[in-house]
Length: 244
Image (cartoon, rainbow, N blue to C red; front, side, top):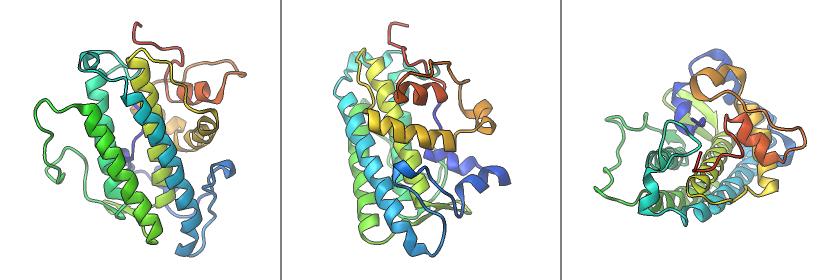
């Protein structure tokens, strides 16, 4: 299971919160560099975070074109989920990110606090993801243009907006790869984006997170492309295909 924005609600230890709250430095090549200061300094890294979200969405929307009703029961690189379950999870994460763009996440998804109407019976989960991604990106773009979402309140915690956007980009892009592979398609994550996401994943996903949220890292050659290192760090076999 990939770490998702929804998991921000379960970060409880001081060590975990310390990685996500207050001043922090992102890898420079992501454009998310921030070292503290007044709230106005969130503008530049937030714009970079939204741009990274947009690129991740563009990639994943391309993967959704391969989804057919017959494919929804297929296995995915996320061993606990078939394709339908994976798409439902991704839709849930997009909903959390959409809430985060307002600066506040009300509560855990799939609880009585979740204000969404249930999806219609038989709804196409790929279309729900597409529509959710479009809405989410629009909300974050509007927030950035309006000077908002510099911070995001999750329950009683205050997180940086650029961090939430960056985490969302990892979630969306890697699940886009999952979707493509489940459908038997070879759609590599664009190399530059993979490099940026790898830098962020190494920052966000530590040994402390591994046991409860991730499969063990997969060994890949040192010379493997950034995409393979990203997937392997998140417990995926870069060579996985639906026939496995």
